[in-house]
Length: 110
Image (tube, rainbow, N blue to C red):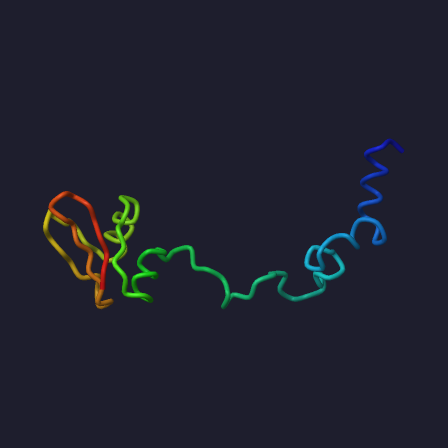
């Protein structure tokens, strides 16, 4: 065998390669016979469809500046058609308000 094959075979053996790996990476520790192969339970996963800034304002009540991408996502999600300069709109029944200042920047506050 050449050098790569020796190294690869040594990495697969329990005594050399897997003992150095953390337990969650070792093949035997993964429980390959489990019904569900996911490492993280569903209740602990982050929801990719939620906007992080909206959730942060919802939980803390702070004011957050918004980027253009955040504004487009919020306007799509909460069915806001337009927001003129100096205008504020409520986000559904969340008690949060999106405001466009006279300068043209957007902020979100509760």
